Length: 321
Image (cartoon, rainbow, N blue to C red):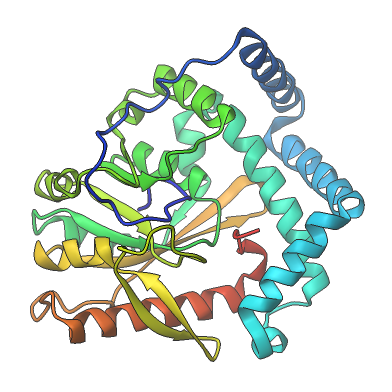
């Protein structure tokens, strides 16, 4: 559904698409990542993915106990987002914080060796709820736009969706870490379908996104930004947790103009590297959808309402830390 967990700007003219993994890395950096991957894969071979998961839980718990700054930052930012609705969470703040550390650590471990795991094993560990929403939308032949948000490990989601046979495209920030560039190169060597994933920088030409819809791609971006990076970006005001906030609307407007089906998507990380893919419909009635302020505002408010319900149920998946 989404091609990458980090999308913070509406695409504007200014740059061209950049091939994933094309940036060079130093010998030292490559060697460091190679050693870490070798160690993790050795654990997986000796103890299975279950053993690797428990190692990740232990590692994440140690981080939670030691890294008080990050622990405090998570509690502060999640608390500021939820406001008075903190008491409505499905668990305590302390438990959510601990689970956040464990979940992010385990997901990163899987991300590092994802290309070494058999395709069948990955698909077996994925539960795709209401998959017919995706398939029926694609049958219209206009592509699909999926509104993502800063909740969950979307860097895992892109790999799963591509392996399931979907044509994926997404938008991300221009600044990407060395680990992602290294891992993406390994992915493309192991899985041919991942070479077809289209990734655009946040300042790419909008026509690239139009072209993705024309060619039947699933385009995913996150609209729930915490701050605007340029004054020209189009936004809509929504109410979430009793506060008024501004979310980006650029990609949504492109989808409305193209009469593209619009869904919302979440990914939930379960124990032992199992994942739930959760698409939601109801943001836009395609038969009545037009790029008007009224339609856009209604869609954006439904988007915000869905985020609110999801975050209260899975507070540990809050990723804006």
